[in-house]
Length: 147
Length: 148
Image 1: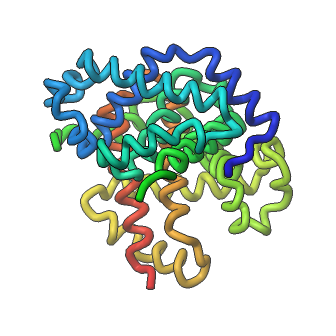
Image 2: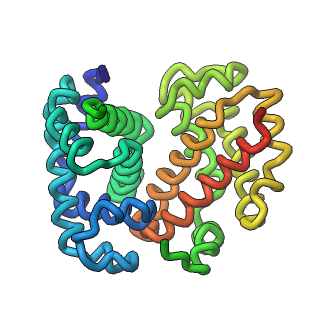
């Protein structure tokens, strides 16, 4: 189980408080689809994903990015119980969506890059360390119910 | 996958067109690796004080070695069509003498991407990020190529 220190929790929650969930979610998911193009296979119904600008402007990508990041907000509120928080989503991603868990790690790293772009120098090494721990914990929690 | 030839120039254009000091970027990249992934400190026993984030960030040996590592990445940028050849000797060194798990090359690559994102902000577009992710993945693979 991931254990966060008081400082790490504070880094995560204070960063989260300044995040625009809709914008950041759309950007993170959009970047995932551009930087790791094979991830587009999970989003066949999303329409035009034929170029970076098509992806970044796609309203379904933005909406789904918001959904994904809202879910990360649950993680931020439940840092001591990531596995429980993501239990149902883990089953969904395994049984229905058939998503390779490696993709959760990729999305986590893309989110870190988006945060780095937004916060610049405020995204200190210590804050990055806390967030890397969080995204790794979320990726593990999402893979936990796989069988 | 959409391959745009101009993406190959993205790493070079970022490095040349912007006044970001190479030295400062090198230092920050190495510092971050040691802070974010603390087990990597095990390879740098002789570096002195790495006991806290601020100790790492202020450590002159970290700064010097970061410069060495990123200078080597500069060779990659000049030899994008022959990464394996470029890193052949370094690969042997990291396997036979330094005993570094190749996973750490991927971690350093990702930390470098974050440092670039911090420096360039919105200029670090998805397309530019994609080109750099491809580069750091290629370098990590090249560095692991001579492992046995």
